[in-house]
Image (cartoon, rainbow, N blue to C red; front, side, top):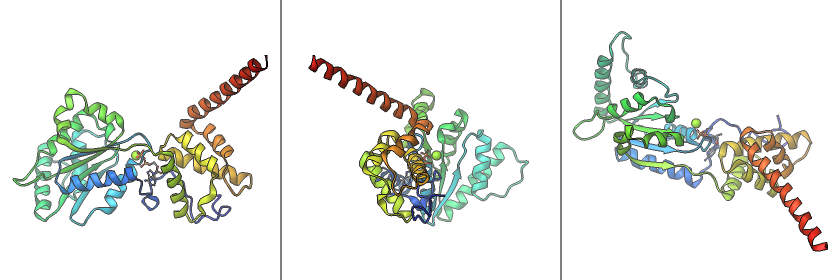
Length: 295
Ligand SMILES: Nc1ncnc2c1ncn2[C@@H]1O[C@H](COP(=O)(O)OP(=O)(O)O)[C@@H](O)[C@H]1O
Ligand SMILES: [Mg+2]
């Protein structure tokens, strides 16, 4: 709605992980490099973890988009499935035509045959699981068993897990020690630094066709403070900031707009309340010091 007002070709801070808006930050480039290296080396399990909103689904989509022709990718966006449903989902992704009335062991045989066939045709088969922290215990364990399938020379199935820190906590338990030992390549996405946030906002504005100076320096500092470096929160605050500036007919987003945006945003409220509290405490302290000096 504010696109015309700010001369934008499209909305710069949408919440959907759109690969067209990818900004090559060092952490995301590093995650992609780990994925490429490990997948090319034929590793069985690779894990990318990160807090909510740090860019995991976007990386998932980039991986699917940039995959070379000899990679056959199977994508599981919602992993809250039973071990059997997982096998069915994998079968469907690998293009297996089958009748629904086969039993679990027949399905496993069919899968194995399909994996061998694809491998013989020079394909690398990669199962990509987003939101992996939601995998039930038995499904997580069944994944390990699936990656046991191998030829004499290499694994038939490689698995990439994208998950929130809860996934790491679960993997740390005794129950998953075998799986944990299989994960030889992993990467944890850090949040963005203030300099990276400025770069991120600027790049997304450029992609959307805007002049990059739409946010004042103080507005960018406020985005940094309230977002805690989490890309999704940066998008939310920047989007709301643009809406508020538009509502007032302003050509630039100010610090004040971002403060209002933060008060109106669930995950940033605590930070903004803390800030207001800190300002209040500082004011009281200054008045007390002044009174003391004047005594
Ligand atoms: N490097 C990046 N470049 C552009 N946008 C990013 C980047 N990292 C994260 N984002 C954006 O941040 C938002 C949250 O990312 P998402 O992948 O949904 O996070 P997660 O899956 O970790 O919760 C999305 O809008 C996504 O496009
Ligand atoms: Mg996600």
